[in-house]
Length: 405
Image (cartoon, rainbow, N blue to C red; front, side):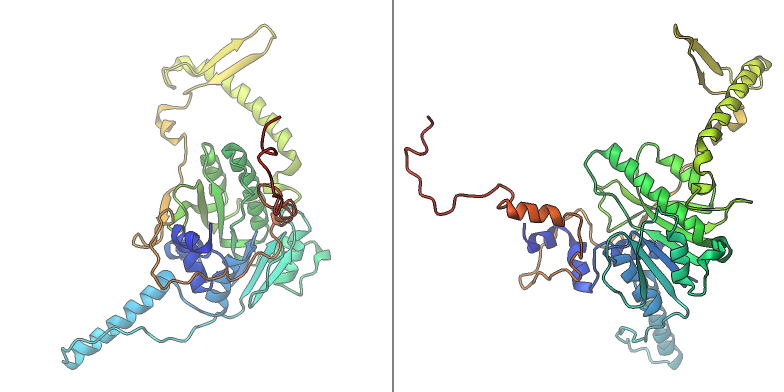
């Protein structure tokens, strides 16, 4: 399959090359910003799993260069048009004027710091600090804070004192295997690592955006994020294929619980204490189940059985807790995050194919991969002579050679 066929099949792949983006994923961040205004009052950003750097490129052009895209650019054009129309009516000149594209110089922001982190090398970008580090390693947080603040002393151990970051974004995803349950699990662990690092550096009121794979238990993830953020949304940009389980979790207004202290050594403030906490919780649940069973006859609970005990021959008793909550609390069983579609509905459909004009010329990618994980596989395939092995080029065969023995 050549470039032109991929241009037809994926319009955003073609647009990314035409507009100078490193990857089509740049449109996802732009469309998320259109919906949630992610870049407002933001000067310090951390981009996790950043390679090849398309999201960092968006940050560079919006925050450092001061360019405007999406809703912001549209609002500026509308404001200029209204000013022109008001000028026409105020002077009494009712002759229509042709709306022109407003010429406005970019307005860069001051004191912008952007740090991009990935295990893979990232080609340089204007104003972007790139770190080749592991987001799951405890040494990454001091390294990140040192990149944001050169005066930071890693030996002081006061990494929680600064909390300098306004926005943490992550577009990382594992190499999918096609086994959806496995892919969703690996992606959840990657998201867990990104979230834990974000909790270490976000300041109160900060924002967190990350890619997720939607599965049957994803509502548990939403509820966990709701502990740390005031608002949690699930967004599906127009440039994200509808056939994909990919979505983006958008968490706004970071509000850590009282007394919470984040650290990569103790993820989510729990760390290695999780097994003991789980055991204590199970013991409390068993006591609560006994109390519920005793109070079931008082009429304060639902009429269905609260706990069903089923002992087996091995002496193991399973307790199945059913609708034991009060009737007025049955509606609070689950918390479902709002699901929002982002992007202009009149924009390109990422699942559709479009006819290219006759004079279309397919362009090369803006930034080819520097060290793709599949590079070794390509080298081995090339050494083997291609996908179907080496061919006998130049060898003449006779009919006798093709006869089965």
